[in-house]
Image (tube, rainbow, N blue to C red; front, side, top):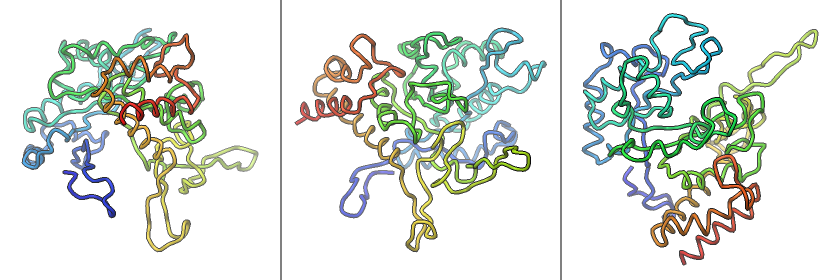
Length: 357
């Protein structure tokens, strides 16, 4: 946590965790997680006290809710805060849960930051409709916005332009942060309808993974979220034909052979299980994917960008380095339009390295 101990040979000296999720034994779907009467204030107070004493509190966060519903409904021809096509009467929405847990934790665990994967438009719309509350910032401290809602393609129903600027000014207050994330929407969540977004899928070029940190710098966000690195171990499957040719899913727990989930090959799997009966040796070990190594390369690229910014300024980087990543000379660089030529990315990296010598 403090970056004191290095790996054998002095490797990674000074490296430390930059963020840590609070754990309380509850899953997102546990009703007690959002019931102030069932939560134990002492547990959270002690958690925060310990982290504060160690100097780690600014790295601790509560993953308050994941992707609260804000859905386009054909029935009402607009986005709604719950699925009104299935539930007509107002239910206990995701937004109710966020509000209750946020109020509880801010009261009993002051200093603990609350993270929600949502965007400003969704939160403001639902808090205003459901609670007549305009200022949503007091309920969310770390905003984690989908890349498709940060800067959507023209023709999308609502998120059809660059929304990065709406988080500027005073919206992100002291101690708060703006992160972003990519998920199965980068490849269509099953139908393959989406193309052009950064993603860590196995069957796409390596630049599709490594480009993300360059775009993180471009959009000036301070963090990235990825939901899981070993998700498919119990969930991966293969298709099997039965009598009459009917296909069915058959569990297959070997990610070395099957890594298809959420419509993408490799979604949720960045480590592989190094079991002795499969890779040899005597011990179970995690085996990192090439894609995870590319994420590491991207993180190092980001560090180069920040070092160069401190020396030459952001404007120099935007004019002399990021332009190398453009799809072509006429198209501005953005989250779904960037070069597919790895040599261009390496040229940008070399330019940074040369300037830092």
